[in-house]
Image (cartoon, rainbow, N blue to C red; front, side, top):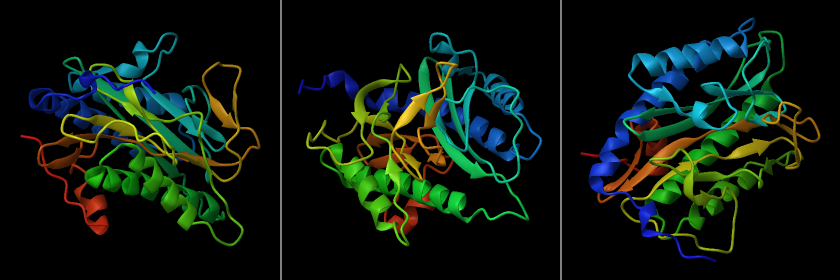
Length: 279
């Protein structure tokens, strides 16, 4: 395996420059999530997020991907990731994953979350439990990062948590073809961040490392299909999927979740981790 370049590690000054794009991303994603409701189109969510980012002085970084023209990826039900916003109207009971990114001052943020559209008359338990497991697997991965020596410990923690939640015949699929990544001047940088156990240890976890950790979990197969729009990734068996992501910085005094307004404090506290702000 090739050695990792020193350039994957940011300086303290560079880490501080990543705080603002993280917050702009977090607020835009929250605005889109708050607007999720039956009757709302995925394109309407996209417009809300774009307005939030531009009003904050940022730019949607997804638009820098060749051929992509939107602020968000909005993936519904069996769509795992990269769903293209359009005329699709959300319905009660839909499992909706929203991925958002912003660039501010040449630095990037990237975050994703999933919600289940309320349906008073429906049985939402399968989708809600899938969503809970996916979100908590992300936080277990971040907690592992806070004390890891090498990056592969993150994927091992995510997989261990997901497998620990399997019961009553339910087995979750952890996507292997799509993984997390480094982030900084570019939205996608080295190193890859696996959501499952791998033999290679990966780079050292030390100050200056910034990664986007993003488990993508299904209620069935890990096999996927690229749809005709050349972007949307769906499960081959039609099973539901969920996606959660945060950009996380490692620094001299600990870790800080750049795309959480509290730095991840509330979610990490039950896992015994206290994130430390960047100054």
